[in-house]
Length: 257
Image (cartoon, rainbow, N blue to C red; front, side):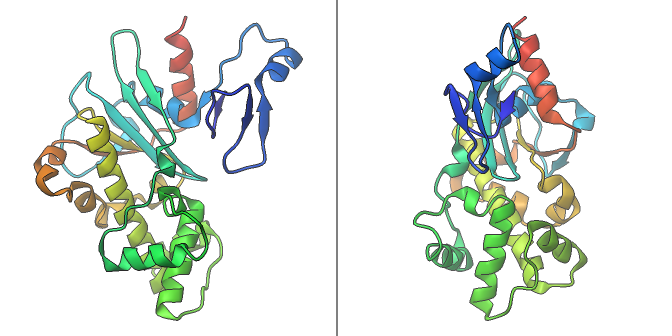
């Protein structure tokens, strides 16, 4: 099982839902000889080491170096993060909760968005912007900043309004989302030394791929001062493969048998 939560406990509580898994009870009730439970983005990490050219779309320049660290992130219900190091006997994946690191605003607009969100939350993590709920948070903050009424309530409606261009605040929301995503991806690339590439998965980004291509995503990825040239060699790729988590869970098991 690949779960949207830290997976090391015997009783696993999902971060963004009310689901609870007791691995011992589950193994007993299903009469399983063994049960592996891993983080859902750890599964994407195992998948990333086996991706082929048709499994992703690249944004910008850069070429992946074989057997070098890979960074994986993805906004969906939450913000998943992991690192992976390919090897001759399968990938080594470093699972973590990087999506809950602090949001780092760049520029006056993002600083003001942070100020607005601090009236809602005691602490603003990256996930508070880079997720489905994050789209809602950005949209709400921008409407309060502009003195306008929110016309859309759900992440899907906000995205659809942005893609159609029918709501200028929704367009701006998705633009901010893409910029912040690029900056966060650049931070991960620096942290992991991700010369093997940065892969963006999750449920949101593949659906807005054309918008992302035209956005400031890649520029914000590169905008790290003295390390711009370092990042310019690292490819950023959006995962388009169906069910990459299942593929990664399979690779996890294959590496152990």
